[in-house]
Figure 1 (tube, rainbow, N blue to C red):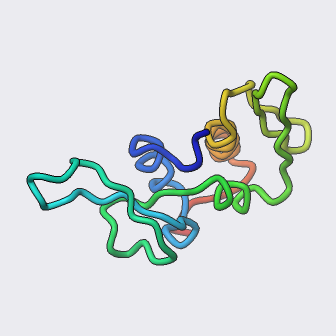
Figure 2: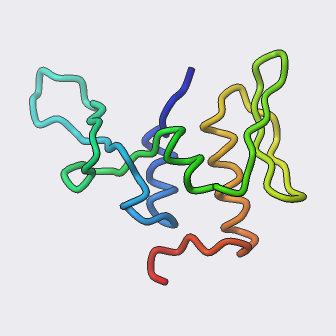
Length: 113
């Protein structure tokens, strides 16, 4: 089960969310023998190259939303009268709702305001 944002998703969220809302981080290893992308997990993300959000952090960003699950293990997020599409993991459903709310300017996640 996917439990945190991918590098691509993290980059997109970093443009609209505060870094403080992230609870993990991606960093690129300087060791040529190590895997290129490694996960760094912790409460401080200042040392990471790209902030990353766990499912828990994403749900905390959407406190008035609910996470629905189907019998066949699909997930969607509901926020008032808005629903996401069904996804095979909860992280993708949360990201869709955050992006949808940001796009519709219903919730201002802009880190500059």
